[in-house]
Length: 368
Image (tube, rainbow, N blue to C red):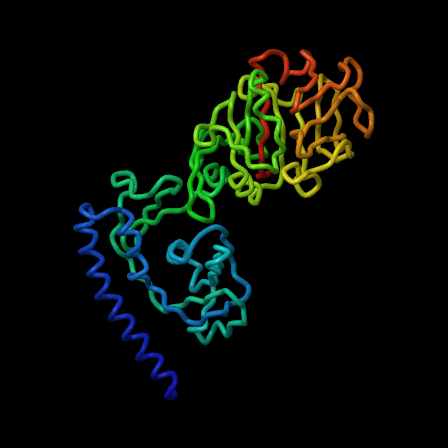
């Protein structure tokens, strides 16, 4: 063994003895933790971490698993509880975690780190098992976070639920849930997991025809309505909240009378890909835009183009009385008939405008 390896072995041994001391301290914390707040205990996790910082602005290549939207403590916990994981890379600004099944600590792995601005490579040659902490009994996590029992001190970690997809992965049913944005702000949203088997949807607005006059502003403007109380007749998220959900979405849709008509959702309905047609930033009048599917009063189209209007004076909508693009729903329309929004002129044959109690919804979603 050369001098540098001997020094490294001594350093690792010291770190191991220190970690054992801190493990006993951790067990003491667990014994007395009921008198402390969950948030304070959560913050002590970093002190008892089993990983040492190896290299800043470096990372190991070819991770076997990449996880988005989690912080350093959560990344460490994911590595501890994954049998393949030896080390991890973390970009804390982007909240991106990469788990590695190799380590610079082991000669047989024969790996070295590469330059990677903003990343930090963490490694150690040991792990420890400590007593668990009962999430169900203590409920230590704040709103918008899901508690997970672990074997590392203090026995739990709180995963930020950043989207309806995160909640879907927990096996829950459709309903209202809190999500957390990158700034740590939480807010309630309605998540739909059931109306379309291949998609998860987040409601961004819903309003009745009676309240239509309150919902004529374009979606690129910040015009929230009851955003802390999701409901079907008078609700719209703020622009920042929409953008947060938008950043985690790939598709959008508009529906009528949800959830009353959940079983026949595809009647008077439109759906599109965000990368093809982004309604949140759209600011044009009557231009043809491609949608995956559309139904207006029984007239249907797949992968067709449809004219949409949205500018500073009007919320996004289409006009089925005009034949400008490939989709044609002119038959049985009324003159200047607005669909999926605005409703300056509307038809009682269109589900969103059948009566003053009829509702319109817009959603952001992702395929699963």
